[in-house]
Each structure stands twice: as structure tokens, then as C-alpha cells.
Image 1 (spheres, rainbow, N blue to C red):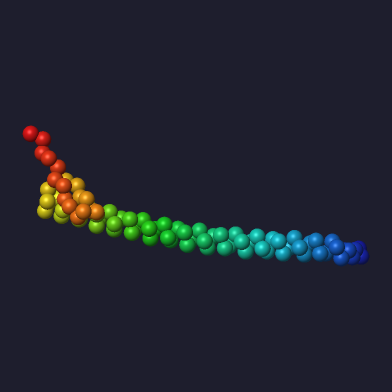
Image 2: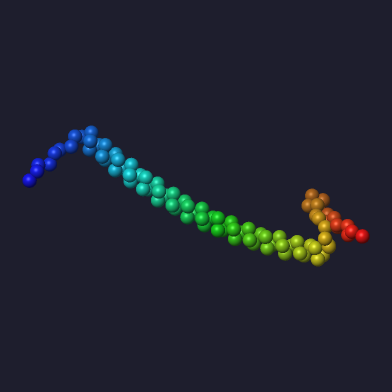
Length: 87
């Protein structure tokens, strides 16, 4: 049987340091994946909110056009400006 060779203390420290760095990078990648999942969820929520907003905008636009006709709105003055119909 071959007798094991004892490693020097500095070699052991280097190996342990590399092992610690490997564990740290694995933890970092795990945290990054969790962040990606959170971002993905936030993007999906934002898309759903945008879809609701567009529907709200469309509904209000149709209501205003049915009420006042075609035109534009000056929000600062609170006024509707009708488009002139070409003759």
C-alpha cells in the first residue's frame, strides 16, 4: 500500500479557498436565477396592466367620440376641440 503524502498548509489553504469560491459562485448563480424569476413575474404583471390600460383607454375613447364626435382634448383646459369636417 502506498503511503499518503501530507499536503503543505499553504496548499490546503489554497484548496479550501477554491472550494469556498466555488460555493460562493453557486450561491450567486442561485440568487441570480431567483431574481430572473422575480423579473419575469414583474414583466408578466406589467404586460397584464398594460393590456387593461389599453382596454380602458379604448373604452373611454369610444365613449368620448360617441358623446362629442371626432376631435381632440386639451387636458390642461378641459376642453374638447372638434375636428372640422371637410366640405
